[in-house]
Image (tube, rainbow, N blue to C red; front, side, top):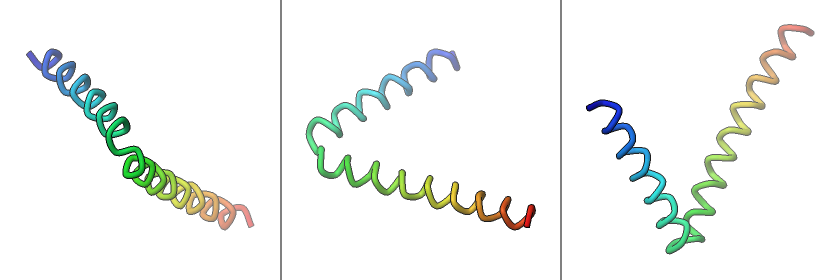
Length: 55
């Protein structure tokens, strides 16, 4: 039962992602840009932290 629910939610998420990109490409690009920016900020924070440990 749990595996089936996971599969349905995964495929539903993929279908929504395809729909979102196909019908609202500008909005989808903004979402991915903001997610990428957040990931870069986190990576920069880790880099600063480890640089402070070594220095």
